[in-house]
Image (cartoon, rainbow, N blue to C red; front, side, top):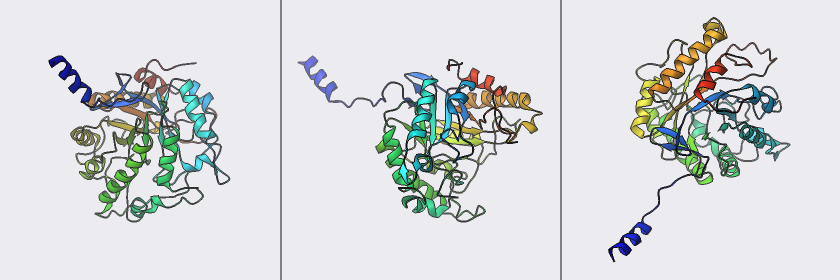
Length: 345
């Protein structure tokens, strides 16, 4: 009787939730993949879905053969999946297929604060209050509806490691950069609402808001923790464009160390979604690789779960941007050590 009763009670207890095999998951302050600790290390390839409508047309398959790391961070905007007023998924499908073939995962970003490669333009607090519910100029649906649509399409694809709602979200009341006390409330309400849409669409995928973390409107000081306390958000995000020699960047109000403590209090891991260094500030790409290595070592030791370098540029590009990482750059050796085992040519 006791054995039968114990079995009945056990069967009645809810089972612990677990994503299907191959999905990146959160386990406290770390990420895991199929039960093993997982650290995201790779490159921003924001125009990977571009046919010329976002910087230059990207030949992603060729570029991936020249890269290292286990993730790429890519723009997945409505504009990049719309042709002649109709939905066209070929570019986004192609990004995921190419990454999957190389054994890499993708960090899709669903819109941009600054309006680059996007119809909706530079975003103020009014957009975070209600503008995101309006149909995008040139688009077929609102941003809010786009989030649900794109995430439902890829909900069963473990190639997606983590979705980002906005690249560098902040809520200024005007430009340049005026901040109202209401900014934090607007961002939090946005994260609650759109985050709920995202989780309903793709419950097995992780989610972040997407922030710089350096004291921007709505996320300065304690406001950062208030926003990331939003229940749908699984992971915090920080961007590092600080001095090359500053391994743990920022000040005592808005620095990386503060953000790590705030996210620890929330029980959420933090990743550095963009870390950029001007090669001119380090005497060239070799010095820059050394600076990236020092930053990665210090930040991962401090508890960061992802280190994603800004940004990739194809061979032969003469864009003159000294932040770009091109084929043969020594930083690729740094990423290879952070993410061993990625398929190579």
